[in-house]
Amino acid sequence: KAGVTQTPRYLIKTRGQQVTLSCSPISGHRSVSWYQQTPGQGLQFLFEYFSETQRNKGNFPGRFSGRQFSNSRSEMNVSTLELGDSALYLCASSLNFVTDTQYFGPGTRLTVL
Amino acid sequence: KNEVEQSPQNLTAQEGEFITINCSYSVGISALHWLQQHPGGGIVSLFMLSSGKKKHGRLIATINIQEKHSSLHITASHPRDSAVYICAVRLGGSQGNLIFGKGTKLSVKP
Figure 1 (cartoon, helix red, strand yellow):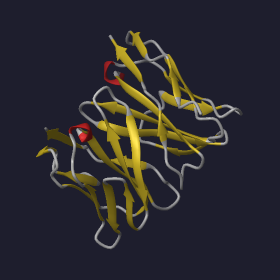
Figure 2 (cartoon, rainbow over the protein chains, first blue to last red; figure 1 turned 90 degrees about the horizontal axis):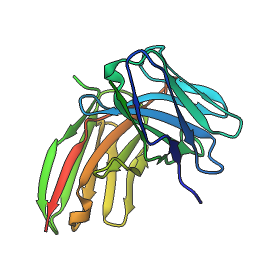
Figure 3 (cartoon, chains in turn cyan, green; figure 1 turned 180 degrees about the horizontal axis):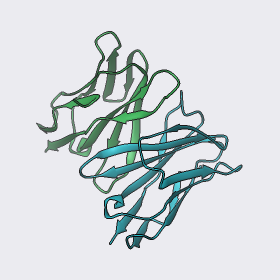
């Protein structure tokens, strides 16, 4: 069974631009979660989707948004990029976000110049 | 004060040693996760606990809900165990967000 895939793997943007990251979960998984990892703050929870509905949201500004499609694939969008948005963005999928093990993708490394 | 505290921050061990990493939290939770992150970024979920103890190979995780504390033990440590180990708690109640510890960097020397 294929693992969680994320595209693109690396991305360079400039301040003020917007970016869309994509996550394809393991087949059959209906839950997708997104995380931001930086050297200073460590791992932080962004949001979590189950069956196309956002179930939980972390403490991030409204510039960060996401959605999940009917095939469980998910996208996250960051608008008006800031230098501080440079980070590794990870997604994870599971059968059920409450009770099931999460399987992480390799991440998208975003650099904002 | 962080809601999830891990100790130690850094740990160096000799191959074969028994290792313990601790996680304390100050919030009500529905579950606790232990994650492993190798250099290069890949994260693997090791355990998800809501009570008691779980074992997988040389890894053992325990949780004491009353004391709000969890431990991750590695028996007969090996250099391939070198990684960052991260504790995360899922908040109880309707919010359900995940909060992460800062991680423990483990280095096992041959």
